[in-house]
Amino acid sequence: ELGEWRPLAAPGSEESAASELVREASGPFVRLTGSLGGLHRVLAVEPATCYEFRGEVRAHADTVWPRAFRGASFWLGEAASAAPIGELLAAPATSFERVRLLPTAAGTSGWQLRSTVFVTGPRTHFLHLVCSLSERQALTNGAVDFRAIELRSRTLAAFGLAQLRSAQ
Image (cartoon, rainbow, N blue to C red):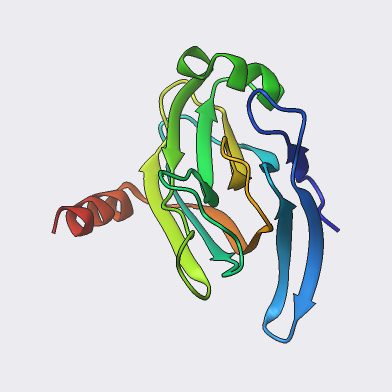
């Protein structure tokens, strides 16, 4: 059951990744396969509030990863409205208050933890969360797994600590 997650076509394409829920001894995860697209979910958030996003991603070794690749990762888009993602992606510079691209797992092995601590903008009411197989470059034998995805509210002190750690 993928619940509130919806297929997401790559910009300028009608193609979206196929998704399936897989269960292993270590627990369930979502596998995206295909050449483009991803999964998308909208979460209500509070403006000017600190959050921590965490998730794990695993890129498959038999996938051919292009250079300057954008995918096999998470991205988070802050918006004032819960408008359909296709409308927001048509004019991302004006539709999203902020977009955070987390590092790709392409070319790595095993599960990779991706996390970020951030403060939403003053007009942000919705967070558009994307599990991305590939944004623009079609993959051959594309396969990426995602699990342990969570968003938690945090204190501003947690944000300050995260900023200090990233500066070191």
